[in-house]
Image (cartoon, rainbow, N blue to C red):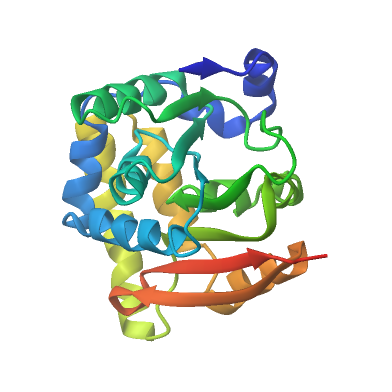
Length: 247
């Protein structure tokens, strides 16, 4: 696992880093239970989209415990080098252990900041992010920096794919989804994990997060093109697919 040299300074500038600095062993178990394991199927779909342009280098951004990286590595085989970056060292340690257990020890895990990634301009053919795009863009003063940095390390014409929670168009489904987040996700996740603050934040941010048109506009304004949104399970989540413009 590679460590970004300025990671200590970065942690002090990112309010969510302290929240996710420690991660309990139950992290994956809780998330699987709360999504009925649908999150894994959605990650697999997002990974397939990341591989559509046959990348030679692909990044799992804000990788957490590495689930998207595992899906990318499974699909890529030896045809593409898979990288995974996150600011939480405990999560990266879990991710690295997960990769080793699956004999994916060629995945490169990097401790670093999504706003200052240690990669050259245009380094990646594809970048994927799973259920962390909300952390970069929900009421975050550094949203523009994150999006600019993603564009910087993505080659012209490269793919950016984000699987994230969204808001169902159907009002009844949206209401039920919000009730589930507030009265099931937050208390159950907090109780089992012992990190009530983290799951309270996750619930609050998901309830108040953007709808598909707003997400599309966000990416297009930042400089992405050909933005599309694929709703999942009635729109409680979705996959955003976009490209970096070719100058």
